[in-house]
Structures are given as C-alpha cells and as structure tokens.
Length: 308
Image (cartoon, rainbow, N blue to C red; front, side, top):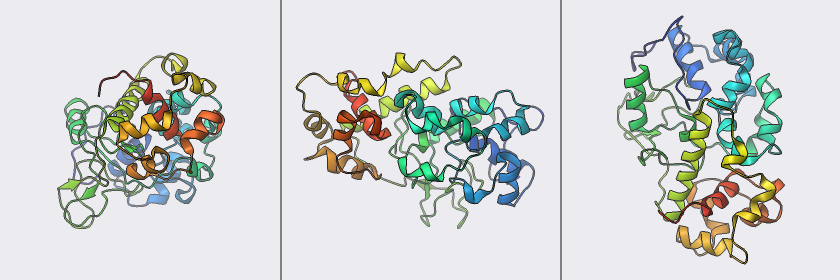
C-alpha cells in the first residue's frame, strides 16, 4: 500500500465503509492493500468487468453485486451498496422510480455497462473531497474515503461544512484522481508529490447555490440512513413537480433572482460547470418525465424555507 495515507482496516483486511462513502473507495482500499498496480486486474477482481466499460470512479455502482460477494459474502447486497454508496443512491429518492437510474439498478448491480447513461449526468469533475470530512473520517474510521455527495457534478462545496471541495494540485494543477488512479483524499499529487490542493472549479455562493447545497445535504442524510428509503416523505414523485411552486409564480424569474442572474435557463448550469440542454427548467415543469437531476433539485430548492 502507498505510504501516502495510513489506513487501518477493521477486520478480515476490509475496512468499514463509512455511511455515504463511495463504493469505489472500498475497491481503492483493497487495490492498495494488496499492493496491486494493475487497474484491469483490480476492476475484474472487484467489479467483475473491464475498466473500459466503466465510468471513472464507478459512480453508479456497476458490478456492485460482484464486489458485495467478493468482499462481504453477499451481505449487504449489491443493491444495498448502490443504495448507500453511489450517485444512484443519492439521487434516487429525488427522481422517482421512472428515472433511468432507478429503473436500471438491477442490471447495473450485475455489471451492465453504464456509459450509455452517462450523458444524463455529465461526469467531467475530478474526484473531490472536503478536508473537514476527511479529518473526521480518519478520526472515526482510520481512513478517509471519497464521499458520494462530494462527487455530484454541480457541487463545489461540502453541503455539511461549507468548505470548498479540493480536487487539483495547487502547484501543478494535476487532479489527484480522475477515477482509476487509485488515490484517496490526503494522498500526495501523482505528478509533483505536492501536498497542497485547491478547488477544481470556483462558484459564487449565491442564495440559490446555498439552497441547492441544503437539498444535497438532505439527500445525503437519506442515503446514509439505516432504514428504508422514505422517498415520498422526502421528495414527491416527479409528476408532482408542478405542485412544488405556488400558482402563477414565475419559476425562472425566482431562480434568476436567487442566483443573481439575468436568465436562469441559460446561466445556472454554466455557473456550476455542467452541461444542460436549453430550457431544462421549463422542461422539468412541463415534462417531468424528461427532467434532469439538476432541474429537479433546483425546483426542490424553491420549496426550501426562506432562510439562506
């Protein structure tokens, strides 16, 4: 294992995977603990599939059942690992059962390639971490995994601590990990061995952005909970989106004011560094079945209380 970070395993050589940690953090821990340097071999060992068929960092939990059986003897199941340790588990309660991520959970668990779904959630952001969360994880669990909520493409601050998420070397601008470099928060830069890191993307902390982070914090709490997912208690079904906004309220105008923009439709996604189709907010209101994750969470943020 690399000496960049001291990792204390729990029992049987496998670590305790903290609530809300990414599934790929577990594979990274095991890859390093065995001294492996072969990405292809580790992907086959832990996910049961070739690396070229996977999204970097495995954000959707492809092959989760293979990992569940290889590491935990099948308990928890692959579906449970997806539920608690992937972006599908984080977004699922907000999006409803009709969303592709919920409809395809079972085949994803068994290893179906997820790249054809990636355009629904553009994953161009390097793996990111909150220094405060990492310190807490090391104190409590003995190691610092990647956390699911920090990998949300349009999140650039920790929803819990408000700290800017770290992603790139402050010296050479190299991302610590784009998904299959088998690094963990707290490691040194792969290129220059630097120990100082900065944010990969800067975003103004407007009222709208703070509201969006609160929604992500709420989802993170649901994902990390031990009980069943209370989907309708936290977020209504997508066909109820229109009821989230007061009658005759101009959603675009409201969002524009909260984000300090002239036009929310054309600017919010650009400010957050993600790609969205034109009119994505209007599409969510008129055709909820076609709504994107960002549009749903922006509309959900309108329902938040009036505090910033």
